[in-house]
Image (tube, rainbow, N blue to C red; front, side, top):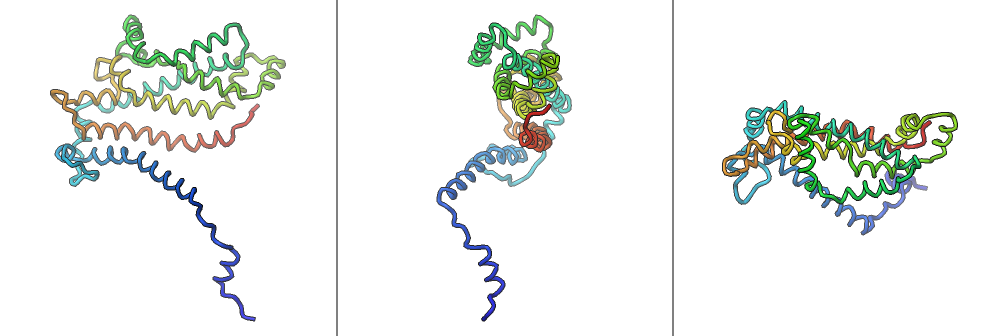
Length: 291
């Protein structure tokens, strides 16, 4: 009896190769197309940032630069108080995120875990405020900030955004999903509401807090209108608002310089995401009831 070749035995052990289903193939192609659509603008920003002005304005446009240059990046670092703008962006986005997580979580806990008269009406008002355009309240908020003397200050940038209706609603929905038996047991043991909030609810809400924190930080880091309105001194601007100072006479926009600034603005967010993503994924995977 002849022995089978090793490769034949391995093939028999593995069995027949599974065939790729048409639906799986179409899903994979759609995924590749979506990834390409997402990465194409980012690739355009990266390559345009290192193009000379002639190539940026050339027609038809090209993706890859024929001649690489660092002049756009050098212009940003030399014509703007670059380090101060980065510091202002970190303080603004980080401060808003920190205060919003504290105040939003406290308000959400009250709406989700404490029974009091008028809770439903208050929730309806908070949800209804989401329908008011941000531009409609910009002038009244600026008037209040100006009356307090907070224009061109970190307080004027951070305080009006220290709480957010969406964040309150988002955390409230998450808090409602947590079991209330532990709350009642803690109250029987004599725990205060703040102790329950700090020791029971918050440890179980880490995934929701991290998600809200990421969205809040990114939205404020990339915000342009708010810093433009509440700061008139270039030293108090953020990186996004500081780039508008490079607009040429007659409103001519140096697209290469703007793309270089956008690239620099993206890098801190990318680094922050790479640092946080592991903790974020682990917090979701290990979500449970913690005592």
